[in-house]
Length: 273
Image (cartoon, rainbow, N blue to C red):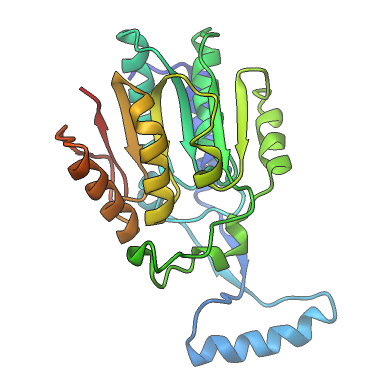
């Protein structure tokens, strides 16, 4: 793709690629059940009373950053370069083929992917498309195991680092000078917000809700609004079994047969025909 210098630089900044050779200090993993980590967390509890914490040193490598396999603490997106490239590819095709509709991501974390969508529109002087930013901005819901057995044991709701406030996400848009009238926010659980979202048509539908329930809620409410020639992107296909199963179930129920194309180890997409 022939990207502008602005777009190329923005992609690197969004995933903190320009600091790939540096390391980060991370607090001790509070989810690891290994006995060594339990001891370290016990010691850490005493240090915190003195405003100190135990940290581990985390180093990164280019391959993981390209494929979105690491979690850079200071980045505005954790999806990696290949998935950003995919968003740009879908954008170029949508514009080239004059596909009607807005762009949306459901499950945005710090907003990086939607910030990138807005930047692509601005860089191309396109003013007739909205970027929709849909999230609870409170983290993920507790799994409804009775209604969605595929979500049994899901622990995403326990991870506070996934609960990024709407104020923080708006601030991230603003620091790139991309918070304007072409960015709309949908705050709340997908089952509540998406069925009544004031969206007429979509050209790009990007799902990053991790769970079966979140994935199915999004597809049921929004896939019918995706224009022919538009693209659906499933971020967690290879990372979360429930997400993949929801996608397969929805495709089967609605006789969707378009080819599923791999982006990287986790993500896939297809073009609606």
